[in-house]
Image (cartoon, rainbow, N blue to C red; front, top):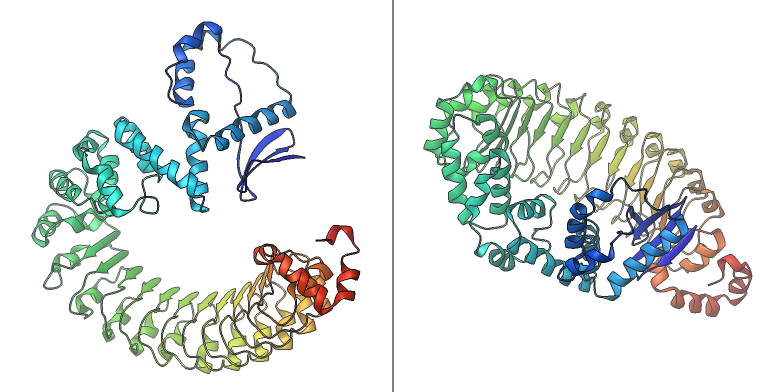
Length: 549
């Protein structure tokens, strides 16, 4: 395999006869086209071309009589070096758009910008802005759809300037759904004058595209009176999904009860912080999102929604749940994060079909033993609370695959944790753990184990049993040594050992572990430290030429 580095971000590799571009050591795309056969009579026509795109567009037509001509058979290695030359010229000329077709340069510039290449970001912004402002409507459509016009690239002020001279009504010349979708995206950039265009067009399309207007949440741009008028003209029984913003409503809109087959409702903008009991009459609901509405309590009638599969109550001010929540026997997903729970709401332990529970970022101090009843749980996120201990019964959650207990106050973990044999992800970061239970060896399916920011002194020898482990972070502890069994973790892709008393570089050498980015950046420091602290170990470890720094 041949490899040619272009700069710190870009590398070309010849693999099995094909040339691939790698960005930040990750395969990005394959190079397909290399040469354009340009006849000498055509050269004068290309002198005024501003970019390789214009050359390609001209040749696409001028060479049509030649398409049946047999194409040259270029050896893979020759083609590889041709691609290397082209890409190197593009980079050496500061990512000049005249050197690389936009089909390749745009995605590459976007990727390089996200990696923090300042030169790429500057060129990318300039090229995108120029193409967007000077190009035709289809160019603007393409750039918007591909995500090149985003707040991550342009500031709010820059976006304002980008759209300042444009007549946004041109988007109404597109197919209706496409035009409205793009105008909605433009509105999300803070281009407020698109709101009036959208509003007027929605009124005109009441009768033609009711489903589309609802699915795209375009009704949020209408007044309460206009929304009521809209619903009075359509058959609401055919709708299964609805999103409502009640910011400008004084009371619950009764016409919602006409949605007799509604299955999903997203209900936001409630000013009074009270859950409307009328909602409990929508018994066909399978998914209800009632997040960030200043809600302080739920009515007992919530138990009437027995068909609910998912309930999202995130970002409210709940401190407890009614007992009737236990009647939601079909519930599979429950979101209670970012509330004010100080006590774990025990009624939810009756939800025996629950598969996912998110209750992080509260003030919960303990978990009841009755959690063992939730035998179908697959994911439990209870991070960012005040947990000081875990119940032994947590080991009965045999189907658990993902457990997040980070950012609590845990000083120990019960041995019963080892009974969670289906666990794949375990996050115990930012606690007060001094040791791990020996039973951790039983977590044979574990792939991700996060233990950073604890008080761990050593790692049990049994850790070597976790042979499926891919990611292990032990940084910011008090670990002085690693067990020899760490060499058994042959599937490790990343291991983080820094900010411990031990010298991480020693163990990367000793056990041929994957070296983290942090160690690579500070390798000289760790080498000198190893030479000084343990010179004999340094000499013995670096005898192997493969491991020599």
